[in-house]
Length: 191
Image (cartoon, rainbow, N blue to C red; front, top):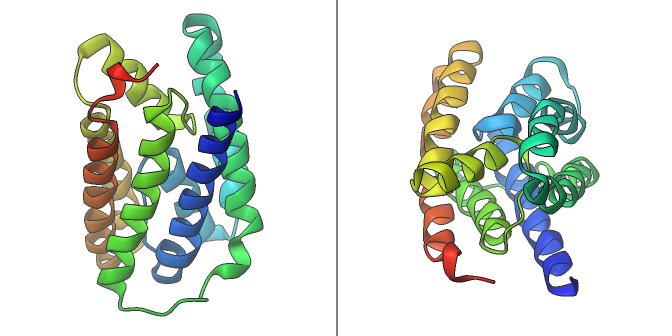
């Protein structure tokens, strides 16, 4: 229990730092519910962590009725990561690097946070939880499923925001997917 709590905290910190230090300064998107929350932040200034919680409710309702273990294992990850995203938002603009490198590092940080949680059978919920559930049903690597879902969100966000957002976000989700796949490649052997 202590190990899983520590993994949730460390994974959440990676996600929050990736978003605030590397994605938000250039209006770059991740995919899934995080991407939707970032779109709402960029368009209307809404708090991304709060939006993640609100948009995760339907997924958690499905998990409650069909996959209780995933519900319990992901609820803490979603709440803590969402809280840290909003708490660490003052870090936006703290580091300045070129947009392309920021997109890569943002993808690696977010992918590391998600992958670490998934490796220990927890997650941030949202579409990560959907991908985890689909992975169990289909046997397809969870990182690949996250990549597909993320691509859909990023395409929509790019159309709403800008071509730069679209291109930088494609780079980001590529690195989120690769990093998550790398970290979770032996997830079935973890107990």
